[in-house]
Image (cartoon, rainbow, N blue to C red; front, side, top):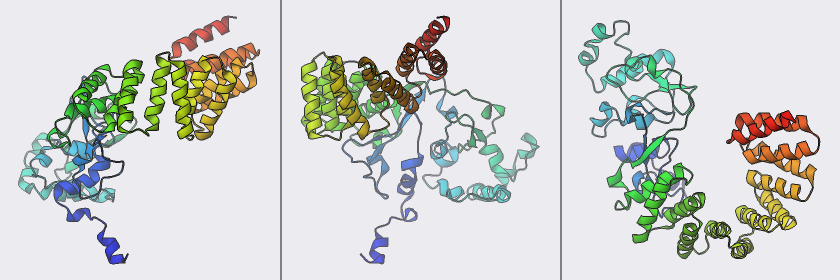
Amino acid sequence: MTLKKLRATIVNPSGLDAGLRDDVCDQCHLQPSVALFGVRAFGRPDYSYRPGQPLNQYLVQMDIVERGKPKSERFEINHHPYRLRQSRCFQESSGAMSCLTCHDPHRKVPEPERAAHYRTACLGCHSKQSLSSGHAKTVPDVAASDCTRCHMQKRRTQDIVELLATDHLIRRRPGGHELVARLDEADPDIDDVVLIEPEAAPASDLPDAYRASGALRATGGAHQTAADTLQEILRSHSVHTEPYADLTRSQLMLRDYEGAAKSAAELLERDPDNVVAKTWSGIAGIGLGEIERAETILSETIESHPAHAEAHYNLALVLISGDRHAEARERLLEAMTLRSGFARAWYYLGRVHHRLEQSKDAIEAYKRALAIDPTHTRSYLELGEVLAAQGKQAEALRFYEHGARVALQPKPIKAALAKLSSD
């Protein structure tokens, strides 16, 4: 390929209309909430978006409704385009305004030049008279030549609470000290999930399917209402595989093993070689107490996909349930050969070694699990138990004390700490 032809394959955003130009940036930078990424359009492969295409045909952008916090007050670190879109300046520009209107996002304007640089950008739309009127009366201590100091203030981001960042919501009137007040670290309390552009989403007759999939992904599947909604939609609509995967994962999280078995079967009808669906089918079998069936499914999955760590891990759980600990150890070791950072596998390896009376190996496996995931409650509990049985009370206490501070479920660790301390 000649250099000329090679260059012709590269899309220069400056040659696109305003909407398609912004889409190139928005694929990464329009992130309404760190808690919820957009859902890729059902049936679109990963990374299949190309500059010059409408982004909403690839990515269905989601927004959240946060309980107790209106949209105008939600502010996160990656909110530059999101907040700019809420500005009256942007909304009344009929698509003419973008990030490039004010600055080159990839070149930082030197500090001494900023006030003049951004004032010049504001004068591209506003007259000097409109910018100057009223400033001396309303804000006498701020020069009218420094637009962004009042209208695009720095404020504290709610997802990285130690940081102040420029708010790209162009305010008519400046905020006060509340914008920079200290915030406690907290996950957003999501009340609802909405589509930013529901009328432009692919398969616009299924907006609730996208909303439900987005909610399930944001909550790790633990959202009963979203699962019920998606299940009802899929009863009457035949769609691509992705929502079946979201539903199956959620049903497993919610311990609806019968539902998960059916959803996994539906997924396998559409994608017979889907190794994840095969593994989920095996997990559902474990939950239903169909141990022999689960072992058969997972063994067949390993035979056809020997490099799938989850299948080895879940087969180990089946073997553990049948007290076949030596066989389970081999499956766990294989899973960790394939994925060394598999914390749950290290935890179960510790349990297997403990049952096989291999205390030294059990201790090392539990420690490895905690090195990967310092919040894993059961690893602290069982490590402390093994250490105490070995006469290593001081080391057991040290792990209990640490776990009581950082584990996801500190209460049982505190109880174990109190009991060991009183012995």
